[in-house]
Amino acid sequence: MSRSPFLIAAVALLALPAGAQIRVRAVPPVQPKISSLRPPSSQSAFDPGSPLDALPVTFRSPAQMTEQDRNLEADAEASIAEHAGYAGLEFSQGKWDYRQIVCPALPNHLFLRFTRNQGAGDVSVFSASIPRNGQGRVRIIPIERRSYSLFSPAPVNAQTIDAFNHIRAEEHAAQPTPWVGLSVCYAALAGANPQMNAQDGLWQSDSQGGAQEFSPILTLTEDGSAVMRLTDYAAKPQATLWTLTFDRKGKLIKSNVKSAGISAPRKVPATPTISPESAPQSAAQANAATPPA
Image (cartoon, rainbow, N blue to C red; front, side):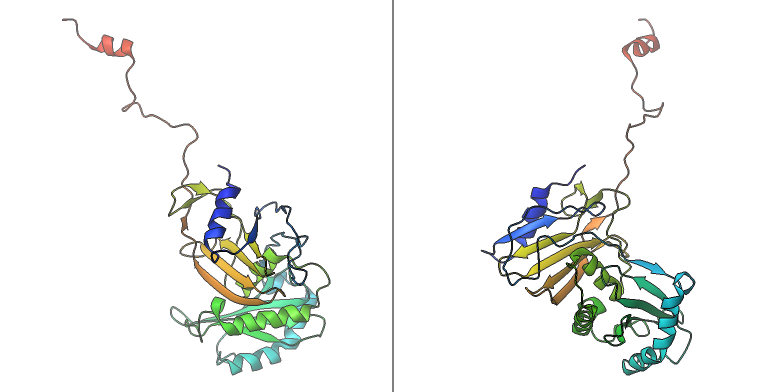
């Protein structure tokens, strides 16, 4: 079943204040396309020509990392330990494992996720950002300390948003911003293992009952700001909807994550099968089975 662009646009309209004039473009998760848009405010960072490719985030174990990235991690470990200590993450205690967060939307940084698992109810997690070009500093994003959020949950935490904006400023990007990929990267740094593609195809909407594909949507307003909405199908126990709000300069100012209100697709056989016990009898079979009067 194909997704109706008119339905997606209608949902986006309901989420904005009355009277707001918007332009909406839906981005298919596998083969992104850019619809024709009128240019937004000249002072807006949201160029209609910006790439909307999803640029999926992937993860690598230390053995899968390049030698250059492993050396960069080793050089930054003392600084990582120092910043983690400021957040009370007890980096000097217990065994910490890490893996790389590969984020193509922010290529000038090495991102790592550190985890210490001491059993049920005692898991600590944080992300670390290391600039590759030496222009910037090591930053950490606390996610959990002993299975609890340090402040508010990382995805909506003002400190997470502030660190992300500083990381973007350190990028000194010369190319247009890939907004979907950037948003997926934020979700990963905040603790998600995001997957934007519905591998099983169509998902069932809990509220509407219909099956559809939920693509990332970038909503542009006339004042030059924008809202990115995307679905993380890999979230447990249910897929989640991320909503990131950017101001006209492209700075992230708000993040929200909640249940996407969808459940896994129901697989229906292409051709219904009928068991012999329940198969209806033909007229000839019925007559043959009826004894003569």
